[in-house]
Length: 94
Image: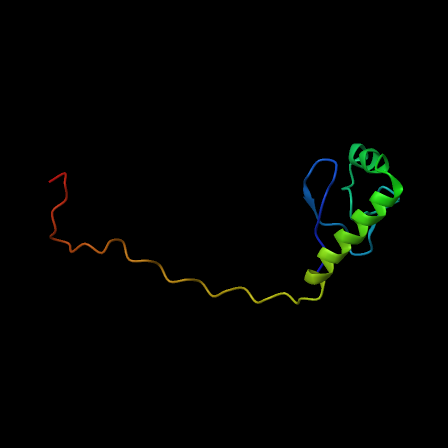
């Protein structure tokens, strides 16, 4: 599976490319920010040691999911019965 991260700038969940590089932008993807330039600037303002710690934690959380394989899609659930009430039962409206 591919890693999913949360952006420190806008708070969105994003899925970077497998190569961790945005070819159309010519920049590297980061586990701290999405591809938006405002989020990139926000992440650059984080002090270096704190930024390194946040990157390490983001990768540690993502690695748990990267080792898993995709599970097969569940079979379609059967449709539920409409009501447990017998057909001749009275309602409050009758």
